[in-house]
Every structure is written in C-alpha cells, then in structure tokens.
Length: 286
View 1: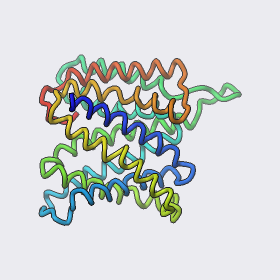
View 2: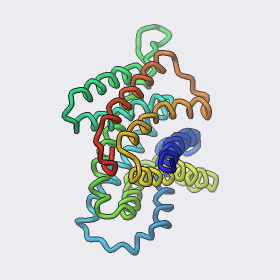
View 3: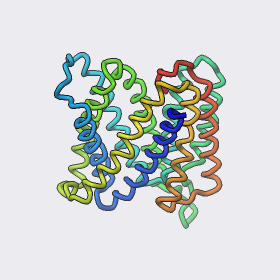
C-alpha cells in the first residue's frame, strides 16, 4: 500500500507542478520557466546529496551527463508544447515516447497493436479545428504536437540512459543529471527571460514547481519501483494523461472537446494494455 500511494502521489504531483509551471509562462516565459524548474531542482538535489563528496571517475559520470542532457531537452520541449496545447493533450502525446519504447523492447506483436491504437489517439488529441475561413488547420496545434512528440522521444532516451546512469549510483545520477539538465536549459532561459528570473516571487514559484515536478515524483518513483511489480507500475503510470487533463481542467480551466477526450482515452487504454503486459522485473525502468 505505501508503494501504491507513493506512485500515485508522484503522478498527481508532477501534473500539478506542470499546471503551476504553465501559470509562470506569462512572467518567466516558457524557456525561462523550464530553466527555473531545472535550476531549482538541481539546487535541491545538491543540498540533499552533497555532490562534492562523490568520488567518481569520468567514465562513471559520462552516462549521468547524457542522462541529464536528455532530461533537459525533454523538459524544454514539454514546456514549449504546454504553451500551445492543453496540459492533458501535451502529456498524452508525450507519453507515446515511452509507450513506443516499451513496445519496441517486446517481442510480442500485441504491443505494437497497442502502439497503433495510441497513435490513433495521438492523432485525435490536438486541437485540429480549422480557422474561421475554413481553409487552414491551426498552426500552433501542429507546432505544439511536434514539441510534445519530441519530448516523448527524449523521455524514451531518459529511460534508457537513466538505467545506465543509476548503475553508477542513484543519488549521484539524480544530482549530476539535474545539474546537466539545468546547463542545457540555462542558455535558452537566459536569452528568453534574462534577469527577471532572479525576482524573488519567480524564484519562490520555481522552487515550488521543482518540488512538485521533479523532486517529489522522481523520489517517489524510485521508492515505488523497488516495491511494485513492473506491470502495476506501468498500469498506474499510464494514468498520467488523464491526470494531466484533470489538472488542466481544475487548475487552468482547460476544457477538452469530446474528440480530444476520446483520443486521450485511447492513449490511456493503450498505455495500460502495453505497459501492464511488460517485463516482470520490478526494478527495470519503464
């Protein structure tokens, strides 16, 4: 029961954090908000793990750097998609990355059927409504969907690289990964927002988003993975798109069309079907 509560708390926490981060876009800009989240998370992890005490060789640090680079790119792309799509839609499209990875690592053709079903759902979730003239599809929807899919691809890389990085030490991987992710995001955030990111109210909000979107969910995931069967872990994680849609509705007032809700339901169903049939090793990342 504690592991289930931890996992579900992490799922809810990361979506609340994403909703709150979207509220920062008008003041901190999209790229600035991403930099704030990653920078504040790096500070928290560093204070927790005290990385100056690590005794690691470069060949041990290298996979952690690649892991962090994937994390930074994933967050940048996800926030850029959030600026153009409702939260639930962005999460649903992003989730196609790890879903496809799970299917690709399986020898069963059934998983590819789940991916095809999720792909159909992904085609339905963005807002493809035409313009008033009835001639053009919404450009922002195409751009937002592209960023969400790119974020999903980096998420898949984050999963693969995270296992290798974690083998050298989970606490070191979290901290060095967070620092690297911040370094990746920092140039974009500085160019977009500059010195305004140092305003106390934005820094405070950044630490809040970092806690909800990074520190709490990542820590809870590590706790749950050691205690839950991978099928249960995958089944509950597949609820993230629905949780994102609910967070968007409650916190941001984002209403989805029936077609978007149908697409989201397809992705959740496909994710649950694919991931819950996955590997039985509860320590293997999904």
